[in-house]
Length: 355
Image (cartoon, rainbow, N blue to C red; front, side, top):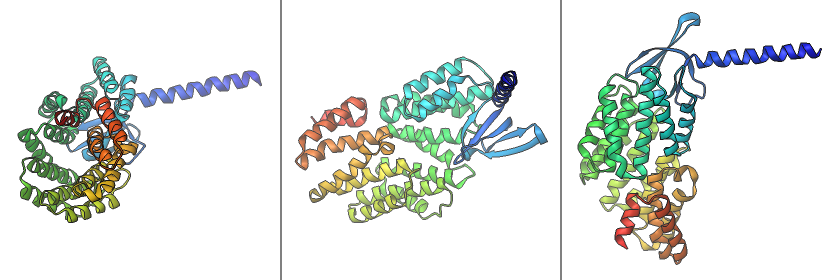
């Protein structure tokens, strides 16, 4: 009986090892909203789709590029998955080191192109907390864009490029990237591209032109989660335009609607909503406590505070509002955290200039 159990254990371990090796020999593409990927061999790549073919039955799965969230390649080094995890957790320096190690390990051209994109995306995230790094991210994103015009990461690169360029008010780069994004064949990316164009106009104080675009997108009928998120982004733009037109009441109404309609997956939209709500409410000194509460959402809710650029902005505003409601010590605490956690952010620099 003991020998039988021993043999059974060996067979089980062998089967498990074989299954693991088999999985490692496959490419796996993960779609948005699905935890289980489609495994096989990637047989075709364009900027519109990735085709995965399974040997058994020669089954083909065509996966639209706008639905792809992750691609795991056969033979990729183990460090790559750890780097992805570090990026998702906000440990960006560790993620970048892991991606660089994975790239140096070599591999197929498809694998190297994916790692290149992951490094560029991480640089773009770093630039959110420190705009001084934006130029490096833009240079890499432009290089990837030019080299991979028919790659499934082409449109995500345009979005990252536009958003990163806006961080340093590089309007030509931003507008070009958002124009290319609007050429995508899917409504969600078209809406994101239009919102980006409107934000670039707003950054140039062209409020009426920006609002016209935001109004157009906000009136769309979003059906997918991504389309609904873009619709909420447009409403945020509407609210900012209304605030700049001194219509605080209408801006507040729009922002409260965004907060009510956003889901847990819309964490960035929610953080932006609370920031803008705080900005509008703080215009009236009688509403300082309400404004404070709005900013606190971005500070104390982990999913919202995870957006480094928005968290830094919330802390900046808290340094001013805590003293205004009679709690200077908490204002000093917010100041300390801003300087410690985001020393190179525009908000830390802005605070330093005011002192």
